Length: 125
Image (cartoon, rainbow, N blue to C red; front, side, top):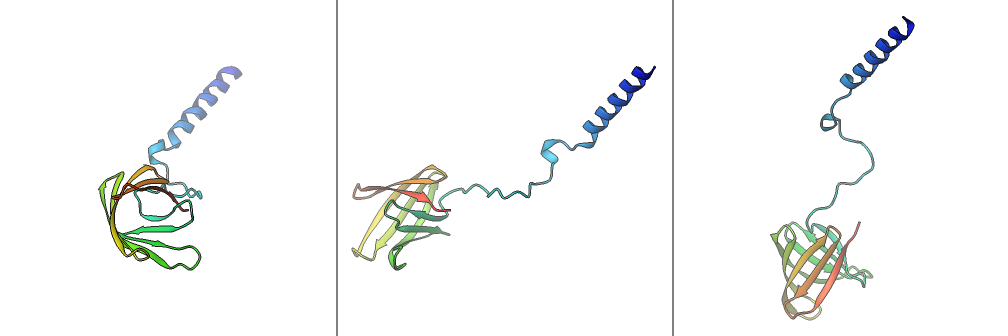
């Protein structure tokens, strides 16, 4: 009789645990320190020399890291979720150019200028 009563209590406890836990899709959001994953090109990017480019609401700028001087500016448009077209003016060379960039990973942007020159940018955290 004791064994049967114990089994009934274990079964009841197991069932109540299943019923009282909400399904995974209804759990409240975690308050952990995990950052949301970056999407698109919005934000700051750096080339291997440390020059910082910023994409913000359709505006593109490139600044030097030592003096924060503006080196280039322009605008960009998303051609697709992974392709971006930049129209920029180099303030150093006094030239304009078009640059096409492919977002190959959330943190790497591979770009080709209309002259054929290629470069990569890495997302800054």
